[in-house]
Image 1 (cartoon, one colour):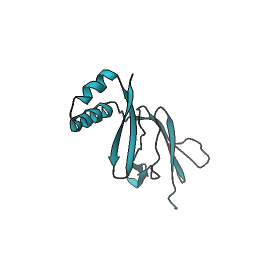
Image 2: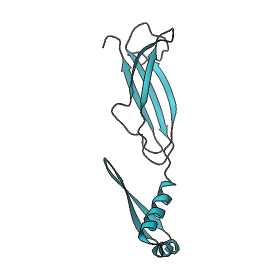
Image 3: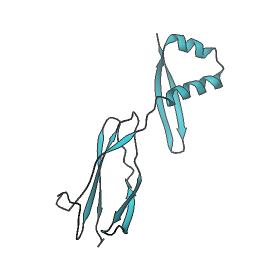
Image 4: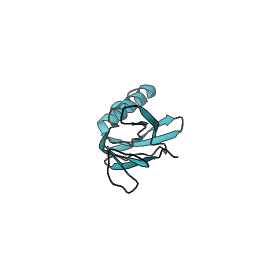
Length: 135
């Protein structure tokens, strides 16, 4: 019978707890290993199964009436990105969005996902960013 073991990964902002069920044979083998090496073995076994991965499902611009457009004479411009988390842990996307004019010159740039929202595993999340030259 497998018994649950608890591993905790400490980070500067808090901690995460993972419960792992191991077969009895592995538990008996781990009990023969000294404690420091046992913790390292369990940590490596858990980390190799973590998969942080996301992909862009949709990326488009629209006007204030939610009509998709790629050319704008005036604002506001709403930049919508839909991301799918294809991994098995939370993903917190970040980066910079750069807005260019018709000549390729950068008009402005701003942080993507400034609110630090997460995308949950096996889900899609929509992020919207509005740009208005007057603001």
